[in-house]
Image (cartoon, rainbow, N blue to C red):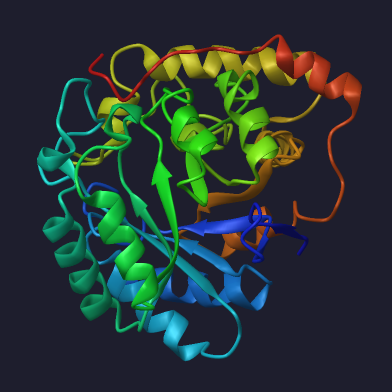
Length: 323
């Protein structure tokens, strides 16, 4: 496992992190707790030292806390998120921060996360949505500073709204954030334009989510793919979206001259190829996926020719919105 600096925080994180949404949330149908626990243990054994969870991920914080406590002293870092008080994802414009992240809500959510996880503190505490309109307004910043001083959190971060990578640039520039979490993948290349260079300039750690496009960049989504009722992927790949994904992945593999089973590795190597990226939090519910993803952190990146081909396969869209 290779490690990278988490911005200018002084922490080093594994290139492959563990995205823990799928192991605890009911809208990822099929997760089995015993399998999740085994997978998480295996990830830590292979050098994964960064785990990302959230208050809104069902049983995830409890499971993560249980496993991390069993690896006490091994330097495993845990990040969690506080959901907006108004429950609105992503954060719309024109909303006062008193409606989303008032201080009392931030503190109450953190205390609940600490209680559920059994951890004494979180290494990274993130707002689950963000809008640059909130800078200098409300009491959220005062609360975050107090929680740091109390030793309940080490770092503050924001999870940038889906497909809005520019919507944290002002926060980064004023220096009030340690990390940002952002969607970045072969299809969604927009963060390369402004966000990632600004993060590099200001020493902000970059946590990449959805590097595999919620399964779209695994090579396993085809036109007739179906998902159980209640699984969020049934809406993410609704209508003809699965067929679109199959076509785009087929074109990508043809241009690169690779097999379908090489798509996940290629997708991870592409994201890791940007020097601003600190870690990629892949969702991994099985030991097989843990071992496969961890193996991509071997120091080998894509060639300039491969990156040039991938640049032609940019496909900006938002499947989180209704089909």
